[in-house]
Image 1 (cartoon, one colour):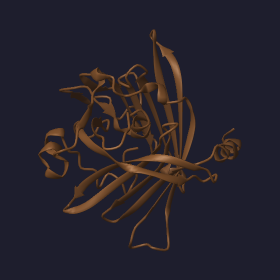
Image 2: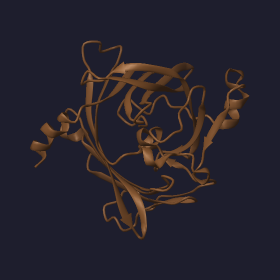
Image 3: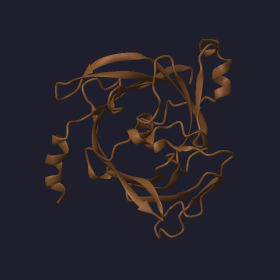
Image 4: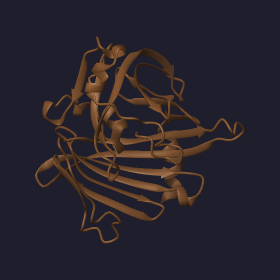
Length: 270
């Protein structure tokens, strides 16, 4: 997903499609712009269920320590107001209770258009009603810190908090480049972000299985220094398997865990 931890948010610089095409490095690439109206996301590849990820990061200044998160992301299909929607609930567990956060998102099933998004970080609630032409603070949520928030859009966009799920629906293939109009609710404005399929790789999962994956890469510039995100998406099941981020000040990994990890944790949540 988007970079949203204490070390994240530093290095993603969004590029528009026009800027991409103006860059000689990508001049010959065919750019697929992912828009709601084009229905290029294959929503049938996003399977309902619980997924869990080990997230860890390190600073070059602290080579003997790692920061850790455990992310639980549960996607369900529900029927609301006569239409089918994806409901994705996230729980982020850190090294203490103050780092715990929850994220709750509702998206139209037909095209993954955002409808509602809410986050609780360190006890602070932020909730939004999201449509194709605007986003507004949800005034029905009593403790919403963003109740008065308002932003109009020039075009529909996708929820950057659900980038992991979005990548699983892309029509990935060798040589493809995608421009996705992502928005991080409540921050800045929507902008196109560029992701390029740079090849494929067979990797080993944590339960000793080999998986043939597409490699999806985002490159950006942070204060004159190069930053890269690489995502491994399985060719057969369209599963998000792994992510590797390198940026000024450190690196970060996300690794999909086997189902047994949640089964153990769930005993403590009852």
